[in-house]
Image 1 (cartoon, one colour):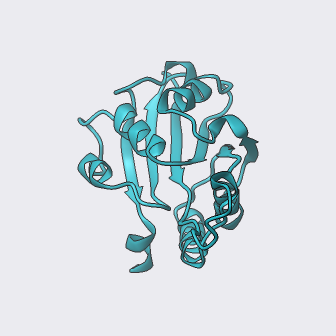
Image 2 (image 1 turned 30 degrees about the horizontal axis):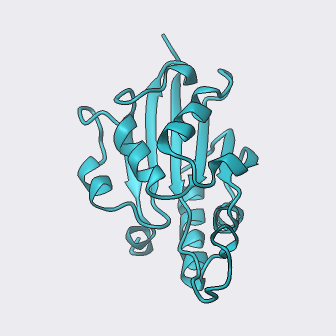
Length: 172
């Protein structure tokens, strides 16, 4: 039987727009974003989320989100993931080694939202794809599962196992 894989897609937390002179790539997290990332960190620990590999955009806000959430596993900061299309992120995931059973991508919208919607088959998803379609806010975290090699990951091949947002987690 092919191995079961887990993919976590995390949109960076809320970034600051306080200084309009800062280039987009260098925008930091806003105080609200830091709080939300802390809530996500608590969720990652309590839910037992343990990616073996974490791929992050090189943008400051994604790196800061990653640092606060602090998931286990090897971290790779990749400039190609900044402004990457869903197809580019999918191609990167398809190139992962077969010994990696779980991976996380920390990235940007609309890429994260579109990727979840493309990969997750409507049938068999426990979480509501309609919620993802309506909004994938900053700090949104989707967990997808699929069977097979990373090279076989394709549209409709995954199942949306869960979808959480910081605001939803704050009430717990």
